[in-house]
Amino acid sequence: MRNYGLPGVTADQRRSLRIGTAAIVTAAIVAIGGVVVDRLGGDDRMRIMLQTERIGDGVSDGTRVRVRGVDIGEVEAIEALGGDRQRVTLALDRTGLHGLDDSLAVDYVPANTFGISVIELRYGPGGAPLTEDGTIDLTGRKAGRVDDATMGYLIRSLTQTATQVLTPRFAEILREVATDLRAFTPILQMIVVTAQNIAETQKYAPSFLIQQYSSTLAGAAPMIDGTIALLDRINQIEVLRTDQPLFDAGVAMIVNDLWPALSSLGASLNQNLGDYADMLTPLLSAIAQTVPTPQRSGAQLAELLDRIDRDFTDAQGNPAMNLRIILSGVPAVAGPLLGPAPIEVAPR
Image (cartoon, helix red, strand yellow):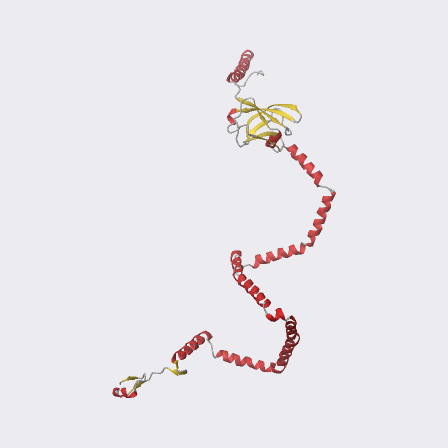
């Protein structure tokens, strides 16, 4: 089989040349037609110029322009205007400019982890619409609308910061701080151990505990008020204000004479009556057993005393008992003979 033949297909050299020539001509016509159609349809891009005072690393002709991560054009040209100013011409797709105006801001940012730079346009607070071949000035007071966050700028900033900060003096300060912090190690260990013990033994929720602890604040104000009132009363003591030596003598007598004497008295009582005190324990235990239910006994005793109090009255300065006698077996006719005394007679 010849080189130009195909398995299972009958073809000769002349026919293969004709087919190849026809395929090449067809592809050329299609390519030319696409270019012509594109030229006839016109360029649907808008060109705007940015005047800036700095260009991000890696930004050049052909750099992509994005809005919120979507490509809308590219950098067409970069020209130097003298000094620190440059003119950056952007060719932008008109369909992607919705919401952009001349108050836009520019960020030079990396497009990927390899540090390829792109231009990111940010929406501004509002301004005039963009126009074809319009110029947006981002110099002078408006230079803050340009932000360089390219990989090269970040590396230079990091290098400059490391050079200025990582000095021998800084290393010495870190060494001193580490030495000082070592002294706080026991305190930190104590805090950790305490927190661990609390976490292991705590049975109630922290909210409940805080509520219980905060209830003590209700008595803090009266306690402080009483303390201040006590101090004020002490300050108002007449002898303390007018006769300081007499007050000092009284305090000295209490400290030097009264308390030592009471201490000696207590020691003597303990020595002479200590054995008798042991005898009180069985007696008190026996007395306690006679009242097995103190609460009920106390209530009954209170009721008994209340009844006795109601049975007595004050008669001409002397206590008298309110007494009523109910007679049984006495004839009813004998009632008037007993006089006007409050006697109830119950006939039988």
